Length: 266
View 1 (tube, helix red, strand yellow):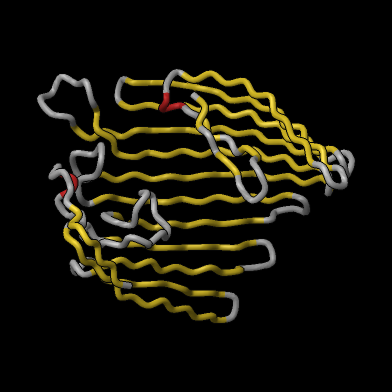
View 2 (cartoon, rainbow, N blue to C red):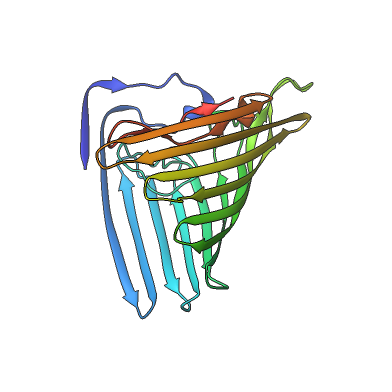
C-alpha cells in the first residue's frame, strides 16, 4: 500500500508527536498468515512502514472442550509505525506506540448459562496525548449471562480499567502520569413476550478515580420496541446523572435503516 500527498503533512511539534508521520510519502508492506491444527486456529499479520517501524498482531483461538473456548492475542506497534488504513486490535485509537497481551475465555458451566471474561495488559513505551511519559495499564471484564428461554435473557457485567493519565492541577512544576481507574457495573434484561413487543431494561453505574479526583454516575433506561409487519416503532425513556464527563455513559440508539448512533450522556 503506497500513499502520496500533494502537500506535506507537518505536526505541531509537540513532544508526543516526535515520531508521528510527516512528509508526503508513505508505504506499508505486510503479510497475513493462518494455520489450523485440530481445534486450534493460529493467525497473524505483520507489516513494516516506510519509516522502518513494524506492526504485528498474532493470536490464537481454541475450543478446549464443548464448554470452554479460549482466545489469546499479542500486538506490537512501534512508535514510528505509520499506517493510515490500519484498524486492528489495540487499546489506543490508532495502531502506533503500543504493545499488549489479551486473553479471553468463554465457559458454559450449565445449560442456559454463559460466563465470559477477558484480561488485557498493555503499555505505551513513548509519550502520548495527555501522557507526558511512558505508561501502562490493564483492563478486565466479567459477564454472567442467563437465558431461561428464547423470549428472555439477563446478564450482569463488571468491567474495570486502569490507564496512565496526566495529573493536572498538581503542586509539581510539570504534569506527571498517574493511574486513572474506571469501573463499570451493568445489569441488563431483555424480554420479548410476543412477536410484536420487545422490552429492554438497563441499569449502569460508573466510577472514576485519578489521584484526589473521584467521580460517579449512573444511567437507567427502558426501551420498548414494536415490530409490525411493515412498521417498526421504538422508544426509550432514560434517566442519568454524572459528576462530570469522566463518568459519561455511552448508549446505543437506533437510527435510520443500516445506521446507528452511540451518544455519550453526562
